[in-house]
Amino acid sequence: MALLQIAEPGMSADPHQHRLAVGIDLGTTNSLVATVKNSETVVLADHEGRKLLPSVVRFLPDGSTAVGYEARRAVSEDAQNTIVSVKRFMGRSSAELKLNASLPYVFAENDGMLRVKTVAGDKSPVEISSEILKELKARAEESLGGELVGAVITVPAYFDDAQRQATKDAARLAGLNVLRLLNEPTAAALAYGLDEGAEGLYVIYDLGGGTFDVSVLRLTKGVFEVLATGGDSALGGDDFDHRIFCWAVSEANLSEILAPDDKSRLMVAARAVKEALSTAEEAAMNVTLSSGQTITLTLTRAKFKELTSRLVQKTIDTLDFVMRDAKLDRQNIQGLVLVGGSTRMPVIREAVKSYLGFDPLDNINPDEVVAVGAAKQANLLAGNSAGDDWLLLDVTPLSLGLETMGGLVEKIIPRNTPIPVAMAQDFTTFKDGQTAMAIHVVQGEREIVDACRSLARFELRGLPALVAGAARIRVTFSVDADGLLSVSARETQTGVEAHVTVKPSYGLTDEEIMRMLKDGTGNAQQDMHERALREEEVESRRLIESTVGALATDADLLTDQEQNNIRDLISRLLAAVESHELEAIKSLEKELTQATESFAERRMDRAIAQALSGKSVEDIEGK
Ligand code: ADP
Ligand code: MG
Image (cartoon, rainbow, N blue to C red; front, side, top):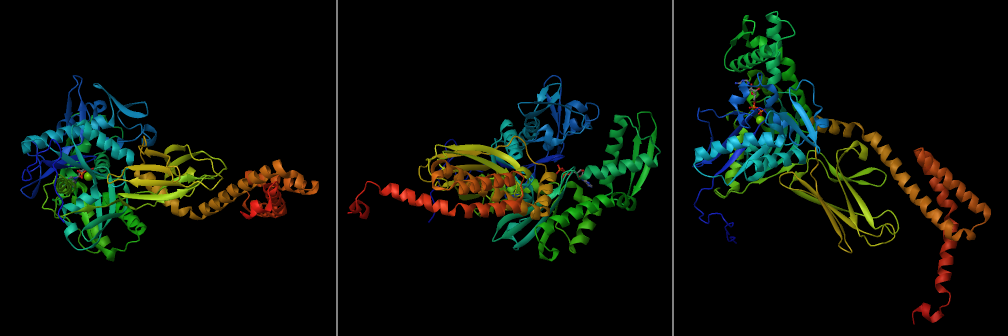
């Protein structure tokens, strides 16, 4: 049955009106905006016909800003006020960024938010990023001749809640309505229309200016699912520039210590040579240093290949790691998509091809492909589509779970689960009469809380006072289509509920994610021992607690010798628990259970006798 369509208030009810929507690739190095016009996707250019917008923002003393090429030209002369690669700072604290001294910025951190000190005041990454988005919004509205109803903005698949939230905030600040955050690899696959093609597994290899991302997508019945992600956040085109820079310094016998200005001139020239070598067999490098000295060098493809072979191999190793992690064989892949300006380098294409044994997909411009896919998705979400339904599935990069007694982790949503997703699990109380429960949400692969990352804590209060283990608390984790997590806890009898939307103040780096993944597999054995130990410890403490409670009320049921024996076992068990000796804990626990068996029987008899006293036989028989 067809559903009736209802127009949103304030929106035109005319179904034929084309609603202006764009896709934005908010890149570390370059950003782009694209749209679907007359069923064709176009990348929108500036007045000078340039499609890329360098992701560089310069703050000027009069409070104005310059964005893009103009800002990029000022990088060396006004480094402190000219911010490059702001994407790396999104949703992060200074501690997490391990800010290295080589960054030219002065950072300020108050109320947990990182800011860059500039002549125009302290600027947060969200504000800086919003300047790039404002520029792209203005470009789109001018070229399309109207106001945008919304935008799809792409983010790396491994971006966590904080980074996604920061991206959304930047868009809001730029006056953009975010239709959806879309994972970059998924956008690339959409650009190629892979959703309409053969079912199977696809790999997205994205080598940009400073980052390298690998993602594995699975397509089934037109539906995408991100199976795995990985990469290296410190590997990209800049490293190739740097190899040429070092080569030039040594070829021209320049001193190791160069003036910052000369260094940047050489780096600019190195990048130009690198880009030229993508289409030419050799390229000239001409640089005039501040001293007036001129350097003229020629770099051949063969030499470039030699200089960069380790970098190229590093990307292949990472690709291989991600494929193995996803238990994928090269033969099983339907196709590999090349994304990112750096994949124009023939050295990369050759290496990828020889690794795969077949040609990668590369007929869409690799630095536009993400924006193109985002534009298609935006067009669909704005309601301009021909009606074919896409269902986009992304994946959780790390497992999400809860802390349980003894500092253990119970995973609720395993890693690589397609999102959106909601999963629930029931928990219970540990102590008699417990009326509150602390809920600690963590992310990571390890079994031990301390080895995972803490995302949020909240409390569920007002639980009915029941005996330990009787209450049922249902905890639900849901991750929405944008990858944002919310957790709720509900006591099923009374309906008391508590809820938290997880907005951690800082995110995880993808190295951290990689490390946590490696840790998770490497430490499985150790974790198992640790888990067994902690479970025994929890169990022992429970046993001690109930025995002590029983002694307090019914010690008179025991002989002195029995009492002493039980007390002695209690203190020895407690000592074993405190010194974490698994074997001792196990055997003492067994002894204490045996020693208290007849005590438990006697207590039971007494309880029954008390219940019966003063009642007639008829009462008991229920007459
Ligand atoms: P990001 O995704 O990091 O924003 P891009 O995908 O735009 O970045 O990639 C930028 C990188 O691509 C830069 O290092 C740039 O030098 C490189 N690049 C662009 N064009 C070429 C080319 N023709 N040959 C080699 N590298 C190129
Ligand atoms: Mg990119």
